[in-house]
Amino acid sequence: MSSMTMRITIFGATGNQGGSVARSLLQNPKFQVRGITRDPQSEASMKLAAQGAEIAQGNGFDFDQMVAAFQDSWGAFVNINSDDEVFQNADGPTEFDMGKNIVDAAVKAGVQCFVFSSGPPCTEMTKGEVQMKAMDSEYYLRPQIEHQLIERKVKYKIEQYARSLDAFETFIPIGAGWFLENFLGKEVAPVFGGFPHIPDTDGYLTFRVPFWGGEENVPWLSISDDFGDIVQGVFLDPIRWNGHFVHGVSDIRSFEELVGDFSTSTGLKTRFDPILPDWKSLDTHGIHQLNDVKLMFGFTQITGGRYFAEPTENVTAAILKRATAEALALPEGKQSLVTCRQWFAARFRD
Image 1 (tube, one colour):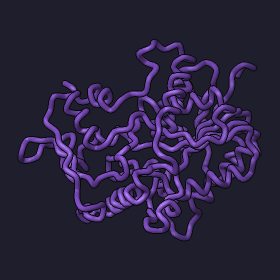
Image 2 (cartoon, helix red, strand yellow; image 1 turned 90 degrees about the vertical axis):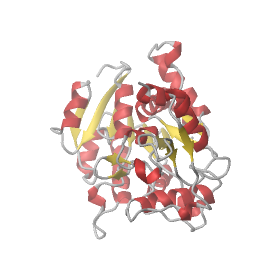
Image 3 (tube, helix red, strand yellow; image 1 turned 135 degrees about the vertical axis):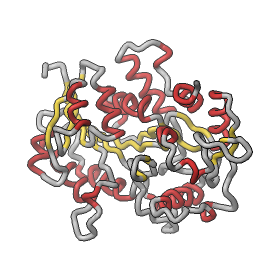
Image 4 (cartoon, one colour; image 1 turned 60 degrees about the vertical axis):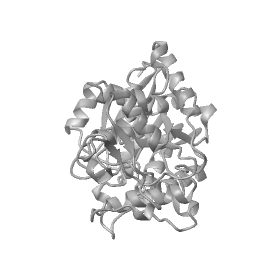
């Protein structure tokens, strides 16, 4: 590593968020990327290594391994998969235990800039009406479909712990919006009307979910197109964003506008059919994981449409995206966040 290159170590580098961050940073010679993984021989780890990342073996619960993994790192991006099987034992260590251990290890190793994938204080925001078991930024609806929900309260607790230490030169939390990539999976589409894969009996691709709440400002995020660039933008100017909760949002569209964007992009017949009268009317079809989807709508309706603690915005994300694009000398057409219409056109248009 040259004196002009800064190493950024990623915990969760083989996941959706961490992988996006790694791919973005690897395009910039200013940064060297190190990915922490429990299994360096896994297919995802070897693929990351082939792209130019250094791979470090580490278990988030092992303090010494974490210190070694973060050693000589200027920056760190951390995303903890709340659905990891290691958290399933009620008597075992918790996600907060892991998060605290990772934060403490980064401090010990001398990390200066710490970017953490966090979430809102959901219980407090709903005055206890909604306490989601899986408010998670990378929640998987097995066997193949990922269904991204809002982050667990525990992520917010880890964020507050990291802030309380006042040990990093800069600390920036970021929250991921609703992954557009969820629409790529076909298995769960029938539960929500069939959109965007299975037409109903009238020939429409129908999206059936409750209203979002408030002004219906749903925060959509393309993990593959934008998330990594947004985070790289933070690393490019961390002092400017120090302490600022960044909204990881590509586009803000209501459900009705979203299906309209799909129709415009593909020429297919679509419609939004809201489930009424409220979120409690959503039928989970006996699927245990969908209880958390149902509670997500309860959370956003009760909070007046807030997915984060503050009203949703993507002006900050646009600034960060452009900063990364300029640093990578990308053409003007590659300097903006992807819109829902553009995202659908790139993936569903014949």
